[in-house]
Image 1 (cartoon, one colour):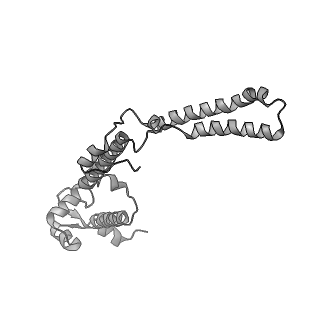
Image 2 (cartoon, rainbow, N blue to C red; image 1 turned 180 degrees about the vertical axis):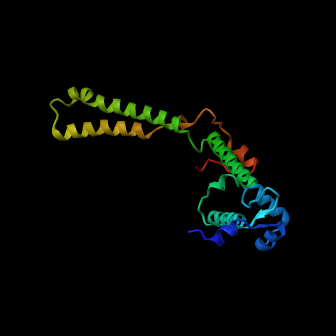
Image 3 (cartoon, helix red, strand yellow; image 1 turned 120 degrees about the vertical axis):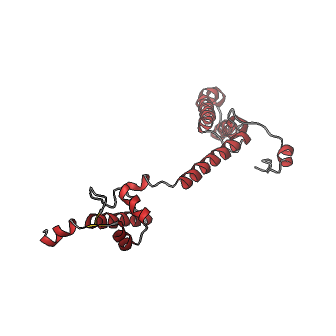
Length: 194
């Protein structure tokens, strides 16, 4: 409930010097706060004490909330150029490192892995599906142990083929074969042990 005293407080107008003393700030900072709408001016360039104090306290609370990990509406407006630039440069460096690893064959693109694995599994599936028709005639009249042995050999053959893939199939178009002695000459690490 508003009292007569509350209404009187909202009408108090003061000079910049009063707010400087009250907030412990310089004249330029008070003017900047007024430009941002935190500190309120009247039509004559004087400052409304009550509204300015409320605005300044609210701004301090918002700043303090931001320091405590609480996001405020003004966070996006208060971006630090140097911090953002450093983050951008860090991402560019990571992209360059990944591209270098791609060229060296240390990482693979998801689509390359998907293509090679799909091809491998399709061949494996075909080989497994062919076993019954391929082995039916060969297994006629065989003993149980002979049937198990012959089937195991066919299955093992298919599994060996599946496990013996060519690593170069996973390389992307960007891959460049760099001789180990060239890497060593540049002071880099060889991938020979990888």
